[in-house]
Image (cartoon, rainbow, N blue to C red; front, side):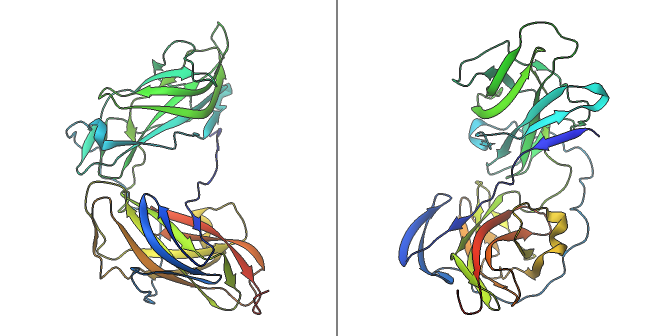
Length: 340
């Protein structure tokens, strides 16, 4: 497969330094007391050392296409990453096609279906429409997107692909830097900083599910509240926030298994966690077996920094192992045992 995705790992992180302050994280206000080597959130669930084993393999696959449900309303939807989509280059069979994904998720309270094709109009760097509207279809020969329509549980995303090529077409070259997107239900958003160039007409696929994997916690996002410094040879404490981005209630039982990983490399791949310093535990979620609509629950976390761990900036990652969603990261400066 000659398919390359150019993009960045989007780190959801908050690093706090100072004495005492109130910060807004993901739309929620939280009272925070900080120290160079620890952070205290007053309503956090205390740490419990519950060692666990990472589940093997990917999440289970769905048994088949889901039946259609009532169509998603505009209030049910949120656009993901509108400020820059990863560009896909596909050279299979001599193709010169490029494209990017459109991603929306269901933030409503119930299952809904996103049918049909989005209407897409390419725009230039000033946001001015250029060229004709996108046609239905795609150029990316290596992609085999899941068939639509996309029936989405709360929190789950749907995806459509926008693509362009030049081979086999004649006409003026258009340079796109984004797109205006309109759904049949009236929901609209604009993609910025997504560059496509070619002489063929733009094409767009129908909406389909993002993945054929069942994931428990699509409705949750994770944020880390960390002090700026960690000391080698000691335990490092910080706070995990689990944020329910939907209008549904999310159950946590059985309490999720999670892994904390440390890496001096900024590039992160979930499948290579075992090559990093890492610890796997079960979340102490007993006091909060559910997370309410648009609510946040905070948990004290603890990870041991080995004596010989490299001094300097390091990346701390938190991963929900059973679903690999949510995932979060932060940058922390590791000092030696003397704190220098």
